[in-house]
Length: 76
Image (cartoon, rainbow, N blue to C red; front, side, top):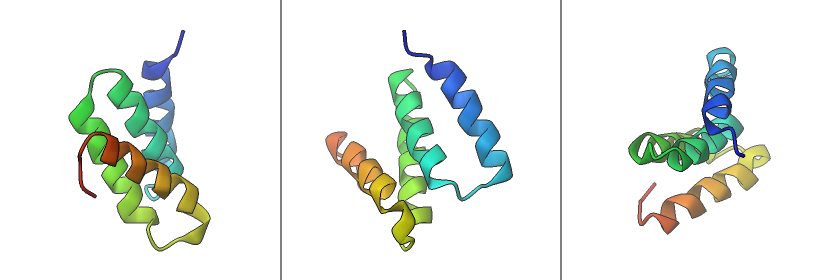
């Protein structure tokens, strides 16, 4: 069984020490959507794109966030 609630808490903690952690925003967004917190998840995915869009290291996670947004017919 997936532990989305625990994952969200872990990503929350990670983001308290690094508020520009694109990886945590992306996975927290996915976890929130899986928990039915769609609006909050979309907000996190948008934040991942915003923070990571000009940082090549985060390209993989930015692309993942963009894909998840497009699946939900959301814009960045």
